Amino acid sequence: MGGGVSTDSLTDDQKGNVMDKIAKVMDDAPTDATAKQTLDSIKSAVISTMSPPPHPPQETSVDLETAQHNQKRAGGGSFTQKTTTTEEEFPEPEQSTRLLRTLSLNYEEEVSNVLSSPSPMSRNNFRKRRLTYAKRGSKITSDPDLGVAEKTIFKAPEIGEVASMDPPFPPSSVGTFSCHGIEPAYDEVDRSDVVVAKINQDRGCVVSPYGGDSRQALFAAYDGHGEMGELVSGYAMHEIQHRLENHPSFIPDIETAFKETFISVDESLKSQPSIDCMYSGTTAVVVLARGNRLYIANAGDSRAVMASRNRDGMIVAKNLSEDQNPNNPVEQARIEAAGGFVSPPPEPGLSARVWLDKDFTQIGLAMGRSIGDHAVSPVGVIAEPEVTHHDITSDDVFMIAASDGVWEFITSQQAVDIVTRYLPEGATKACEVLIEKAAELWREEEGDYRDDITAVIVKVHELWEEEGEPNTPIKGDGVPE
Image 1 (cartoon, rainbow, N blue to C red):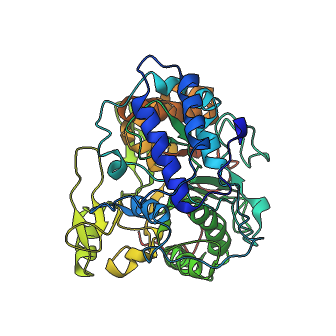
Image 2: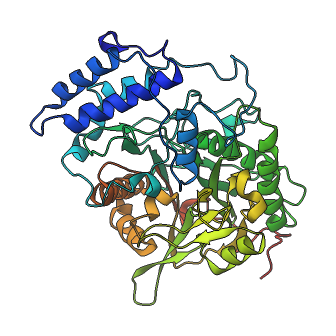
């Protein structure tokens, strides 16, 4: 790698020793040392590391992502079911890749605004609170070839980048962006001055026309998590849009179609050899616009919100979906009835978690429903979505569908207020500002960690050319009045 350092020939134990030496160098670095001086010291330490160290001690209580990381550091074990892949399916990257990302001075470009703003919260429990370890393992790939009609999907582009295809709606009417997160370089280092860009595990998309109808469209946000979260979210994004419109109940009973589609996609993950769905998963909030009615299917803690004008002329937020946190009474009752355990939020602003044991040491999933995460399926974590509907009225202005990266520090009403202010400049501009504001709040609250952030904003009265009776759903809709 850069500077002549390479870890390609190191054993797993030696790689662990590399990480330990990096931690020691950074802990011992003078407070007035420049970033370049520290990085040069780290490179020297990496070069000198050739003898294997003892295995690191195992933690007694870890969440899902931490357990994955510790298992990889320890050289395997039975915690994670390994999948069978070929060289072509999952080409092995150079082992120096993740060190290169950390040691490169280019990281300052990505996080220059973070370095001067360390997290006000303690980092001693940081790993258990936030860290995802997205793609810290040895296998890195893009979305698998899913064999569906990708040309119909407009994917949310990374903020600041040009989309690879034209959106199906004018940017003034519909805007969508995704923003990758950042995280500390290594969990062993209790510092805030070295961070790296995460692999973006979020997915967002717009599909129109949909189901063969020019007055139908699909809007969705997916929030992947776990070692292969981006593969699960990418798979779900493609398969849900493909299977839903081909479901036999798509027109007569859309609620059934949504539920069976989510469940079938979740089940089909088991047959994907390149995706570990035992300890990886994704949330999904999917909105079908059919004429002037919206159908919302939600599994997890992503959220859809409608902004409407009230009698006083104020634009107010109405949640179109409910976050399915494990301590939600309905979710908790189902999980505990299935033999699972729910721990309360460890501190304000954090989520309750689902565990396999009463001592809260196994798994620790922060949602009651998801696609994937099959390790906790036996204890009541399900893929079946809650399905609701909303008839668009003349008072409705816009809809937001977004991943938890938006909702972590922004309420539904605050998001509506932000978008309302910038909506005159177009939905795309308003979406960009909303994501930037969310990222700013992540910086203020967490300093060296930011979750992936994805949002879709839709001006609901600008989707179709005016025709027919307003607020008239297509005949045969299957959600009861």
